[in-house]
Image (cartoon, rainbow, N blue to C red; front, side):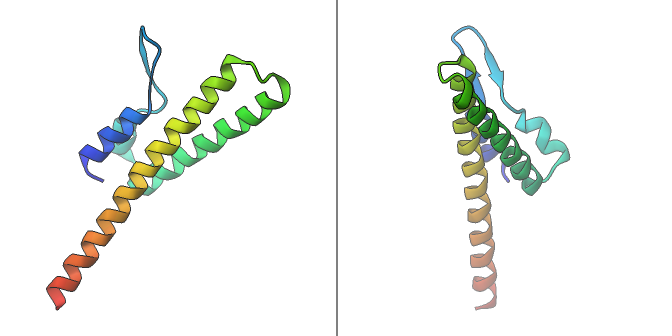
Length: 104
């Protein structure tokens, strides 16, 4: 995964409240020790963790600020996951085109 995609995905994972910013996950640090597949799995696990939290909150108190934060985090995680997965698909397509051009 190239740095541009990594930074775009990281921007998806920043929550701004008008006063400060908070990262849901620090992808830059995560990418130093983990490959793209591991990062996607981690983000998916975190997404489903938030999904379980949102489901529990819906059953108990649907007006909770935690519910809004959970839904927002799920959306941001899904956007980051989509960006990373799409970039992987583009990388695979590009590699395939290069191989077919070289053999053809």
